[in-house]
Amino acid sequence: MKYLIYFLSFTTLVSFSTQEIYCQVYNANYAAVVNQCSSSNILNNLTEYEALGVKRRGTVALDNTLTWLKNKYLSYGYTASQITEYSYTYTGSTAVCKNLVVTKIGTVYPNKFIIIDGHYDSLNGTGTNDNGSGLACILEVARLLQNIPTQYSIKFINFSGEEDGLFGSQHFVSAVVNATTPKMDIKLVFNIDEVGGVAGMVNNTITCERDQSSPTSNNAASAAVTNELITCVGLYSPLSTFLDRAYASDYMSFQSNNEVITGFFERNETTHKHTPTDFLINMDPTYNYNVAKAAIGAMLHFSVVDTSLTNEEFESSFQGSIYPNPATDLLYINCGKLDRNYTFKLVDLLGKTIITKSFEMASQNESISISAIPNGLYLAVIESGENKYTKKIIIN
Image (cartoon, rainbow, N blue to C red):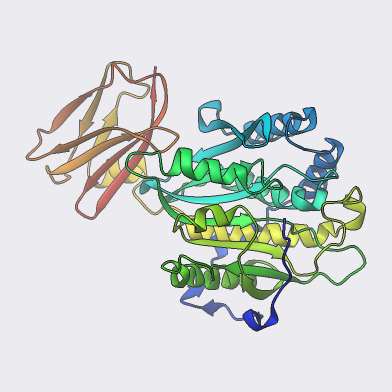
């Protein structure tokens, strides 16, 4: 949703074709993932989203869209324990709205999050462009990154209440981000809102948005990550870029909280948003597909594909292990040839550290009691100097 017009004095046309900008280079492995982006998935998801109807607060259509989104994430391999709903109400309405959050835990920085978000409510019409187009991109990112280890944790967030005044994102910031002890550590927020293009026009440019509002303390950091976003667009999609300011969408709730933000918005703005004619027929699904490719490349870059030791590397290089797996009451650490001063962490799928234990002059084999830990999938992390080892552990 955007209510304001562009001011040209704040914008600069930026188009990149080189492979190395701002110290970023083309990554063939990232490109291989980007090229798995499915144009048919984009089209199908837009079609399905449109068929769900007008998604206003308190409507069955909004509830059905929430269920549709949950089922999408589950079909990609995310588990129920990774999916959280946050309910809220706001002044002027008794309707209960929900934000949907899907968490993918990073292997190196499990407690530092990259948020990629877009709203799923609509105003006056089905909202196929505003913001089914953003959701289609986010879903493709989630599908393709589901089984790729990333150093930073990712939260895929689908907000409600955006069209009524950013209420969903405001609630998440106040009730979740700032209510977490310590406060949730956010690396950046990447907002995708209305990126479907205009039927019959040449849609070859995506607007990249950076913070130019108060508070200004993170404006420079926002400009830096937006430059990185611009570079990713050039490296992993056929699109050119247009640099503008961020405003009037869910990232502004985070901006007010002094977080680092960036975002995508269509360059050719639809005249159909917030009307009963915001339909797929008035969009350019090929453009939406190209924006999704740019978003996938950007998220691979921002989250950093993991380079920490695999289980096999740890066991062969240091002759160490974490066992048994699955585990029930006790988890054992054989540090092998690793330095005897190390830290062990057990992290759940929402990024919360359940156990932290530091060892000094540890024995060859140490045990960790897990009898009080609920059943489920966790990430075990061993850090020793510059060495880091991660392993998924099942507790049952």
